[in-house]
Image (cartoon, rainbow, N blue to C red; front, side):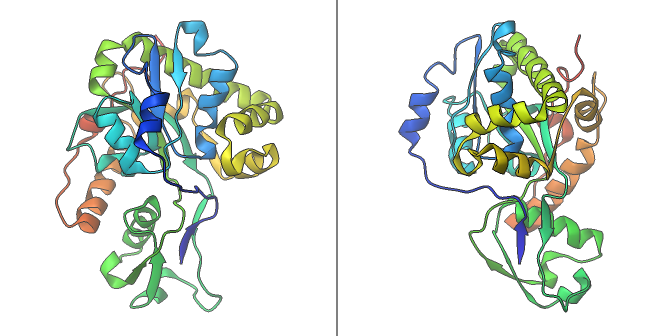
Length: 289
């Protein structure tokens, strides 16, 4: 069974609740970012609570939407400015409407893995065996990546769908293209605030986790639980963000990741995906001016 060692819990949320939370999403000076309950999004709440966004004239709304199809639908309709999610998850929606990743949030650092019996010593030994995985999720993308690295593919396994929680690879903030163009100063403020929040987390982890826990809530409302979950992720500072997303028109590591995500999505969804790095990434805001 493939399962994230750190989990994201899902529950339904009414679309009307999204609309209520993001009533001001179209206004300059405001960005509404939908997201699931996940430790990697803690820096958004930290920057919000410490006033790092507000000091640059930005208000950030953070409605919790525990289903990717729902927050992407809200984003497509303009109810949300954007979303926080993994690159491979949002890539599947890019052919439907225009949005781009403008900031990197976190990456899995020991937070994902494949759980097997003691008698299984390698992935090759799983060939022809039944594997439980949440189809269409980040977990399936992660499994597909591991198989590819070992000269295998999903068809080598007997995949059984389950509704387990997703794992995480790389989380980004992806904003609608119209928002990026019309609210470029707000995007700059968002990125600057996130960088300050990561620095605060590095210098004052205990205090940071308390603030994050209060904001993220859910199963991470206890600061001890959030601190434990944070051990499985790395929050992105400016240097890490530039390495991933690139800068000043120069592509970063995201290009290779997006290529892999296209290949995986094409195989899993049964239709071709050809989303380019330029389609999905806008790195103008990564390097402070």
